[in-house]
Length: 193
Image 1 (cartoon, one colour):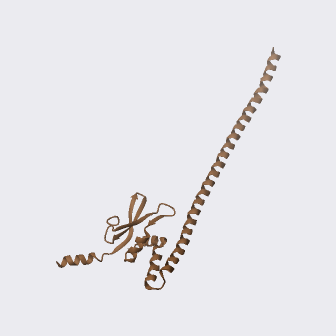
Image 2 (spheres, rainbow, N blue to C red):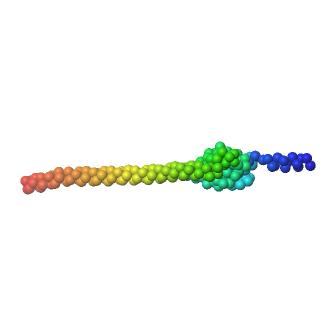
Image 3 (cartoon, rainbow, N blue to C red):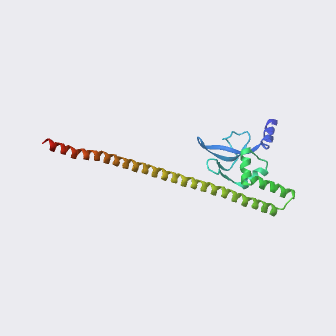
């Protein structure tokens, strides 16, 4: 009986981590952001799925349920280093920090919400600027590639025209001496007759 009581005691205090679980095909991994017991295997059993992370896009695609992640963090779940960076990027850690300040009475809920909204608007502008600059750089690279291809094609056409002109000039040069020899040969035949 004592062993059963001891098992339930430890079951109530299990270490919970917010971490990544790998899925997807070889060399194109996609990760699920999950809440799992620290003792569970990486791709094994988990408690709740919070979102996904796709590092194959630029910028990386992160979709996380911020409210559920904040709830788990406030209840003591420990994120791994990678997930901590993603939660910081999404503003969940800032929201946790502000919420702790509200619970301690340092700031009011309205002030915390205003600070978070100001941070979020700045972050969204930065992300939008990065996406815009990446798309502009991609369009510029495409335009340069098209211009380089057009210049290369023009150089090929010029080379072909130059070869054709050389061939015509060579043919004309060969035809001119042959034409001069032909009348001279006729003149010699007439003198012999």
